[in-house]
Length: 337
Image (tube, rainbow, N blue to C red; front, side, top):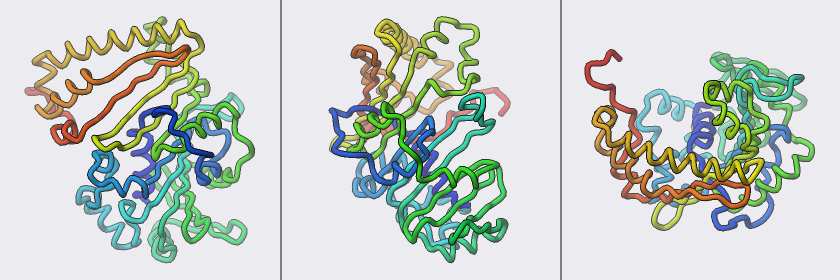
């Protein structure tokens, strides 16, 4: 149900990278972002309407905004035909609040990933409602109707106006939609959001509120775990430029010492990645285009620090994307799928 909005939210979460972009903030955060719950540890935003006007940018291809219907996916095509909604054409902007699985305090821990999306666009309420009621049901919520659709995970959504919709996933998605119209946000988090207000794609995460199991992979590497826990916030943003896309990722640490150590570790990892890409066994698991793309990324990625922040900057060009389509890795030879 409403797979297009869910897809848009997921694409934002996966592909949005960056911070500061030359101090591009131009005013307060978009109104739609202010409607998200104030306690969400991860906030993201995408201005689809702005990106739709840059069809020659590789960023539009990453987000599926080139006008093609989800790569010709038959289920999505059927969804568009029956609901009249195509996110490549009808979605204008979306704000996302994310609660990773098991995130939160002991009193409010969540055991599954929760996502709340508030989106602006053009929606045919009658068609979308009819599509949802094939398997779902409605619940009265004041003067409006809340639609609940079973699935993995279940989804609830509500038309806030003729041009705005709220959609949530999870077993208690209905309550998550009720979290809209929040109180004041944490001032430090809000300041970071405001600083990115001019970017068409951005995300801000409070890493001090991540689930404990996030650090499980560092159990046998105490130094890495210490450095990971020392990152307090991640700020991400991306913006199309004339020659491609400028991406940055900025992690704010709890000390300058940790920032320097993380910078050194990332530089060491760059060298290791370069060696790995040169390994014939690794190259056999990828297409030639993917190898060329990764080699270009390793070469062009900039890593530096400023006080307590570590920043990764990458300029992606159309040539890099043209040579490296987003395809899954090939299975190694002589290995069972």
